[in-house]
Figure (cartoon, rainbow, N blue to C red):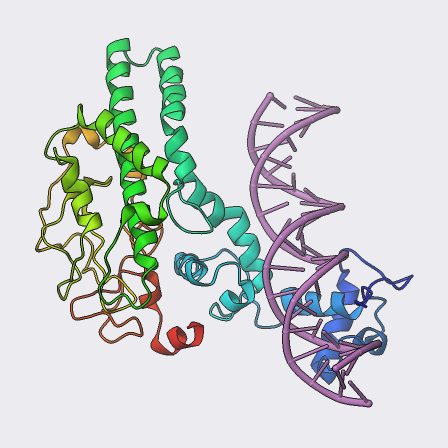
Length: 357
DNA sequence: AAATTCGCCAACCGCGTGTAG
DNA sequence: TCTACACGCGGTTGGCGAATT
């Protein structure tokens, strides 16, 4: 069956609203309320369909509409909520007073989405993009070529910088592959009480071969303090059963290089909760904590700020996520003592968490 | 100065869902 | 249970101003 569009009727006006039409609509609704939207246009003396009137009212004429730029807090809220709800604009809008779903959707599509993409994050998953890692060396090479053409640096310096950047990209990609494997295998376990991870079970063989090959390629030129010498160390923790401490941190942990002067211990530890109960980022008391060598702190490091994790994930989250907030004591995610509100979800009040659950 | 491209955003379109008869 | 209607939602489009060539 299906329904014919409400605007099919001939003669109904479409397109931008005039001030006179706005005035008619506002006056009618202020006096009578909108009632039936389909009946409203006739009663208000408007040559529009009801749908058009409803949109004009809800997106523009409503008295509580907030105009102007989005604040940093609003932007943060949208990012947080989008990581949970996805493109549920109306649901997101209910938590941003005065903002409409349409406005938020436009803001996302024109600003936030691009921002995430530029920083190498998938705007839908809020995780690093693999295609970026794949193409990064090429992009860097192009960027370097441009600099060389501009005669800003001597050739030797260019070659060194390029090598450093490529090595970093390789390690980052390796890190991503390992974490992806851990994520997939961990999530295949139902109750998360104690998980035996098996990297070969659900991740493609080529991914692991790529990771190993990349590691082989990378390790030759990367300081030993950054990458373990023995492959088995890297994979050991990804293939053994671990029981987490109250902080959810396996011990000992191999260290993988991460940008932004941070080291994340690679672990597939799972806990009795549905969320990884990591403490405030980079306060891994039971793990080695090493700063990357100075030569790895290039501009890419500063741009790539992979520091976030969200419930049920082991892969980094968007750097745009707010890392500060109130402590999480007994949230619905069941984080144990010391687990902070590192995840954007935990910034939300308890009723909201239940609401979206 | 003119033409073209780009970015933003209000508005539209079509589909899904809830509900009354 | 079926059908038609009303509404809400998310994706898409088109117009307009700004920026660029």
